[in-house]
Image (cartoon, rainbow, N blue to C red; front, side, top):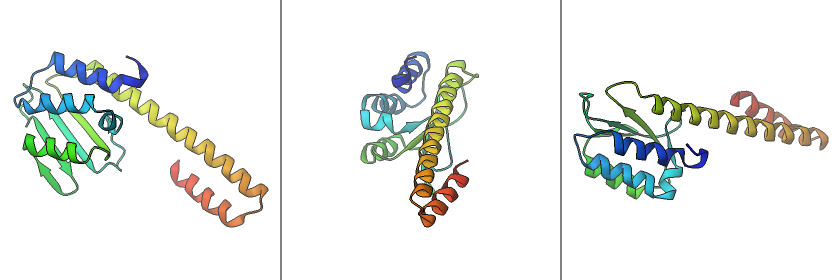
Length: 155
């Protein structure tokens, strides 16, 4: 899988290798992969800050095909879910798949995403360290303490 398109590649894999009880799941997956804004705002790993969660289950799992959680609201109506995703394309969306058996490719996609999250966190910490050094050079005590506190909470 190419690093820049692993999400789309994985969604294609799911579409070609699994079946769904609700055909709207296929529409939603095609929508997720074909819209650049949406596809960049999805995640296969949950970090606790994402407000919207979509669970997609394939045939054979004995679970509802689609479940969307947004805040305290939960819906299983595929058309409502599609409308929500279409109307709020810029909001982050956590996607969780349920397959009848463990899927190695799904595990690999989550691993890629976890590694990317760690790389981004590392970059963020490096930038913050440089800003802390600059605050020390500038003798900006207030900025130094604020940045040090932010760095402490990010690790």
